[in-house]
Image (cartoon, rainbow, N blue to C red; front, side, top):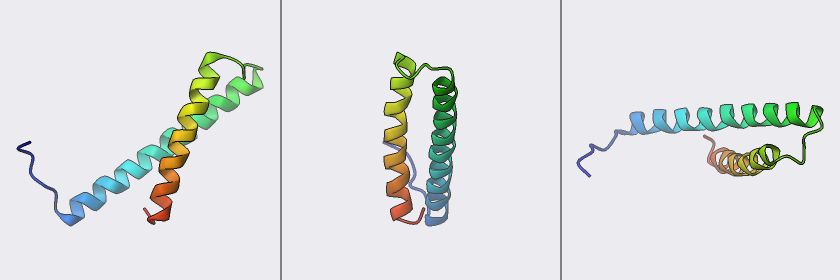
Length: 69
């Protein structure tokens, strides 16, 4: 526990950094899925894992956008 709480500006910066990270990871996941799809590997375990990750990231991104972050 002993962590100091962040002030409002630091909290907003942390949210902005989180949102940017989610969007970067989502873009990278989509790109990797596109590569696998182009190689005809849409039935692989890797593709399916990426698909699940993409769904999760899209949901997080959607919630962030709802709050204009």
